[in-house]
Image 1 (cartoon, one colour):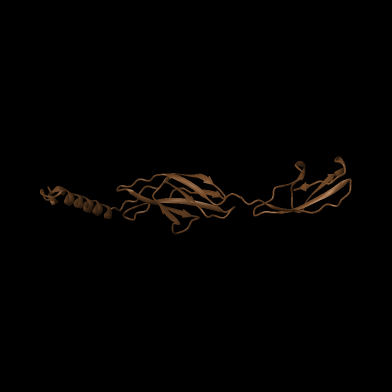
Image 2 (cartoon, rainbow, N blue to C red):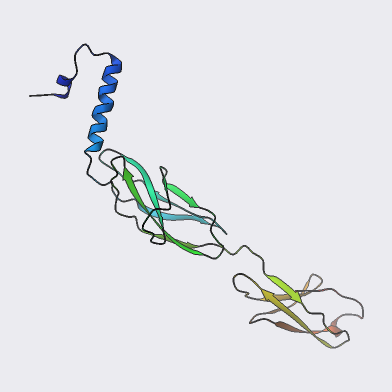
Length: 193
């Protein structure tokens, strides 16, 4: 019976033994033809205007997992790799939708099957722009009008007399509101939308 220790001289120094162990370990790794297990439990951890973060449960491998490849929107090649079990994709555009999955790989280059996917849409962090038309002066019903634009959609426009809410208008631009100016004494007022 031939043992591994038969290959090591009994007079070998500790450095020679360490070198043998490194060589033997590396040769096992080169013969590794087993893929790591697929990462599991991929979970969205946070989404902001330009960052989507997610994490997963570690894979296992007969020799050891070296890292994880990150794939976006079904790309053939990974967008990045990491040794960690969480990842944050940054530099994304607002209101953009993305889908990610992860694979594990080992030192021999074996790659696992993909994890399940996680999807998210980045947030809208840009405030709408609004332009209020100057209403005609006078008493009675005064028509207030505003136009609004946004990189997403406008759900409503609020009209204020100073800090007092006059009314809320939804629909499409231009947004109009009929204000009964007789509800306040004669004078100069600031209308805000």
